[in-house]
Amino acid sequence: MTTLHAYADLIQIPVLVLDHDRNFTPKVDPTRFSIRLDSGHPFLPTYIRPEGDDPIALSILLDVYDLDRTALPRIDKAIANLAPLSLHPRDRVSIYTLDCSLNHVNGLYPPSTVLLSRSVDAVLYSWKQRVQQKKSSACPRTFGLWDALFYLVDQLKGVPGRRVILALSSGIDHGSRLTWNQTKSYAQSEGVSVFGVRYVGTDSFGHEAEFHSSSGEIDIFSSVCELSGGIVVASNDDDMPGTLKRILHMIRDRYIVEFPRPRSVTTGVHDILVSIAKSNAIIRPGGISFPLPDASIVTNPGTLPSNPKTTPELGTRRILRPSPPEDEP
Image (cartoon, rainbow, N blue to C red; front, side, top):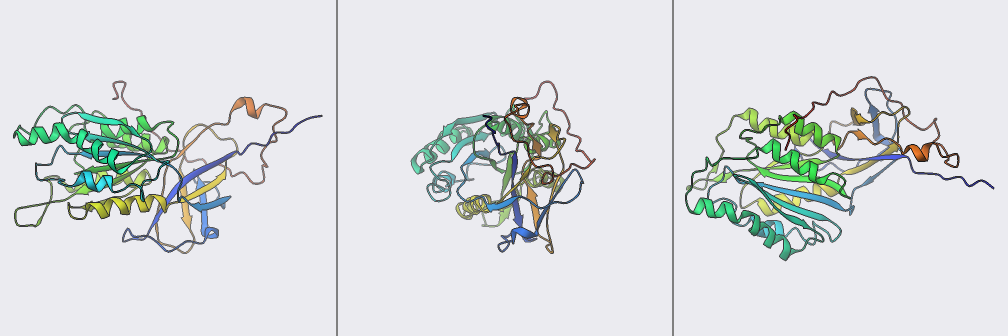
């Protein structure tokens, strides 16, 4: 008697769908979705559902290098209040600060209001000491923004859950060894979506104060986020609690799009285009890497192969992924 083993040979990607004002779109009929892989023939997903309560592996980066002592007066409460409604018991959270160096606390699992508040205070301690002592903001910086995001992506590798980085930053890099494109490509290949909050402070008159940077730098930060499946929003101190909750709401409102592993798949980075018929929505898929099937399973005579009629074909267009330098962080 022979026993056949059927394995789920499926790929899932989270897809962010927003209108052109970066707001939520009404619920989309799943039958309107289609996918193209490497510019191949369009096909329909096998299954689509809201992300909902799927566990999230969240790394929060507080890039405080450009901030003064008046910035982020209540950021500990804003992050702490994400639990338990926006952050759930099955989620994992790590918190980092990027100042003269990159500091972090161990992952919080499960996240709680008390642990989140204490952890934010801990990672911000050295920055607060520096600005209170009026030390120069031009201290040697060992990590630029792109280096730090690359490191966070690497730390999320293999962590269970929907992997997400939430980066509160001016969007100014300050001398990374890696390029923004290398960081963006690594986030794509590892299935990590970067959501950004561009901090907008206020001056003594209560007016919004922009950071001294070119619009190009800010646009690059947006590119890293949007091309990895996220988005950048602006926020000040007063709006920060609502902004953070809105981003977590965006994450949980993403669509999980599922389809069979393509025929003749090769490992590495592939171009995934998700479309919605009769829609001009902003569509950002997160993650463009295909894991190869386990050879021991594929060659096992008891394994039931996938139906070739339902598996999509790859096109001929491939993405060229830049290689990081040998001294990557």
